[in-house]
Image (cartoon, rainbow, N blue to C red; front, side, top):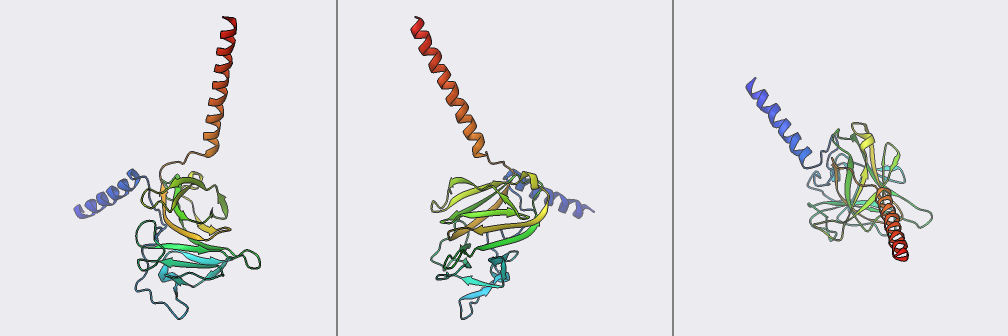
Amino acid sequence: MQIRIINLALLFAIYSIGILNGYCQGTFRNLNFDDPVVPLIQDSEYKVATSNAIPGWEAYIDNKRITRMYYNTVSIGTAAISLHGPDSSYQACDGDYSVILQVSVPEGRHDASIAQHGQIPISAKSLIFHAYNVNIAVTFEGQDLNVMDLGVTENNRKYRKYGVNIEKYTGETGELSFTAINSSGSLDCIKFSAQLIPEPVSCNLILFGAAIYVCKLAFWYRKRCILL
């Protein structure tokens, strides 16, 4: 009984630390791509099993599921998905691994995406991810989420930080998907956060209100000077 209480206390402490740090992963896993099933042995096409490269995730080209993906190399000319580790010339934003999504537009656009089914943590209000040289569309259960650019990352300034608010989906179970659109590049460091991201429209309204206030102040000052 005493051991059980200690175990419950430890679980609660770990959960609390996650909340205090501003994120919790819910039932999603391998969000930083740092848990491949090693060793990753390439076949003659430099590919490995998708289930070993990015456990927990499914990979798609034009909504068609692929069971093998490139490792430490990229496709030339065709849409593809690849995992890149310590021996790759493509540097991860954080940790040892990142994923590259490649689109192709030879005869019409061909998209590349990864998706995972899970439950959004009950503490989550937003989702943060890092990307380099790529436009990423994010959906949950087929619903488009508004992606906001949060600036360059702290540890690797080649990458930019992006975020989406997901407060209305808290606790829901469904498919979370990341799709490269119109460009190819790296995806890394996906995290759920307990913090809301300020919407750009809110900032614009604040600036607009401030501008109106300044104009009114200037008009009042000019009118006062004329009267004097």
